[in-house]
Image 1 (spheres, rainbow, N blue to C red):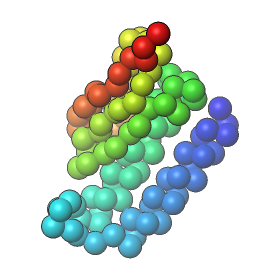
Image 2 (image 1 turned 120 degrees about the vertical axis):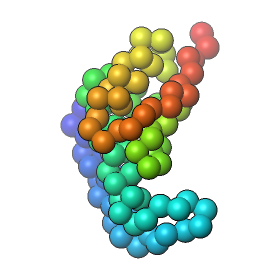
Image 3 (image 1 turned 90 degrees about the vertical axis):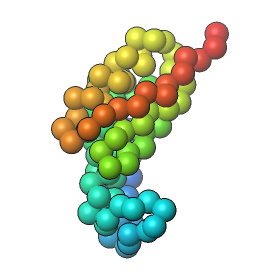
Length: 107
């Protein structure tokens, strides 16, 4: 669990470092501040999922954030796992809404 949290912390630091170089693009229409906020929010959601659902689940769930809207995608083992990941994402401060595109693995 600690290794997952350490990896998340490192990826957050890397994302924030890249965010400092970002500029407003016509395609994304996010300011540098919004980009940085979204990167930090993504890291917080990943950490919440790892804490509430487990490191194994967190590794199979992709998290993307755009202007405070979080999208979850990937494959999970059970409906319960998907619901717990969704609940974990929704409780993170700063999340405006969550789009749940998680799919169940076929048996």
